Length: 633
Ligand code: COA
Ligand code: AMP
Image 1 (cartoon, helix red, strand yellow):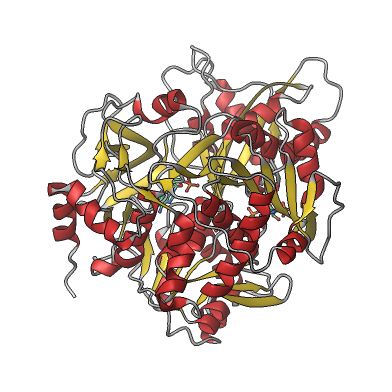
Image 2 (image 1 turned 120 degrees about the vertical axis):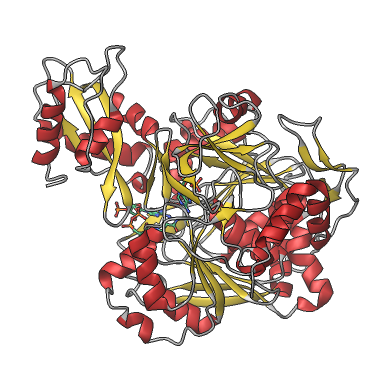
């Protein structure tokens, strides 16, 4: 089939409002929009101004009304606990109703914030949907973050309540969540009124009345109650999702109700090539944007079946888990991160575990979260035997900026490229002064304003930071903070971040945030954290520290303490395992640390002596210190 992409993209460009008004027909509105796009509202305009809707209604109720009551909405598969289960749309509605009733009884109402701190269990989705039903704004925090990170988010979002499970389960340990939450609430200035806890058999939590509430028991008591979906403005926030910025203070990305659903519904059909009723599986976590968009809202708003998977690509129990699930549940489209495939490839290079399962149901494998390296893509193409589609997006956008629109007819794949801009995005590459660069030239990847539906309208309570982070540097454009190029065929290549964000196993982390932690150690005078190449995780953080004069502890001891400190303050997900003590850090004459050069040295890449370096000899010292740790040797 010839791809309709060019015609569809041109159609959007000729009439953006008409395009999105048409896409909006996939959503049930309580009140239609006064304006499809209102350029006068918000920092750069708002989508579907004046419209009223409810995201939970669209994701659950309407499907029950329209004949999908018995269709499976959520499949739960947890190789880590040996549990499996299914919820039909009717059962999902009943659970969401019960949880909404409990939340409402405890004063949660439209506009209130609720933090969700959950492992990959179906009630994580139920929590999000129950908040959406009441018009409350959820903020899911990834389970791998430590209590201080949770505290930062509590203080920023000022939640009325926290919904949590008593524990999360990693292959090597059970993580008690409740003590982490208690500690976070101790650290935070804002104190949520309630903590609703889902008790898990692996580690039930101690509950302190009246603040802590046993959620499952309360839901049992509320069984059978119906709670109406609260009409919200399309422009009201559905959720806040915190993501790494350039400092330790994360950015609260705001997602609205209306535009979000419209873009997701469009993407399910046209980008992922899915039909309502089919099984779509994103093997991510609800703590990340992929989990929000494509474990929870996208498949459900579209009337599909989603999978909540509690496990890892390898080791739970083997590298065949993904293929087992695809085969067992008839997955049509599968979405994962390249790092997960690299982990599988390492344990099963010949794809022997793939051959054990009939995965003929699978049409396409989608990759995102980090650059899809051609080796991994080629391996997957050969071993899995379906098109492997890289697509590029960010927490900020909520759906793909660029991808290969399978539903419109797949375009030829170029390895290393997430293919082409999706309708809604006018993607350009500019130099540092904001001038367009020619085809094939590397530069700053920017998107001409306005951003399409689903993209962040602003940051939570931080319009000024929104402007300074994204809009000020290239007036009229959104700065993606990714560097890349567009080739002669209009294919985009995303090469690296232009800020100090690094991507570790598909997780977005701030080196600035880690530097703040290292600098807080009493023996550290100066520090710099860079992302160095990692075969499996893509990048891993490496911290360089200069110690204060007169420190008597051994370097080894201090480095151990630093590794422990990052784990304690940011969390295990930071995967900070490498600290290197050096006498000095390389700097420009104006005092800027040459992190880029250090990274090239660590990765054994060619590098030029920076003209502005203060003392070239320091780079030799850095190289020796890095190699002494076995990096790049
Ligand atoms: N709760 C608590 N701890 C968590 C956690 C969670 N939800 N998720 C990860 N961690 C911990 C891990 O246990 C590990 O701890 P350790 O240092 O004690 O071993 C640490 O955080 C680092 O985790 P991770 O970076 O995930 O490494 P890993 O070795 O456990 O697994 C992969 C590697 C590649 C298998 C895994 O990262 C993966 O599946 N990545 C895909 C990511 C993804 O889907 N991203 C979303 C974008 S699509
Ligand atoms: P996150 O906000 O966690 O989704 O991370 C977004 C960042 O991950 C982007 O700005 C990119 O740097 C990187 N990224 C995500 N997907 C891709 C991709 N397909 N190719 C290259 N980089 C990607």
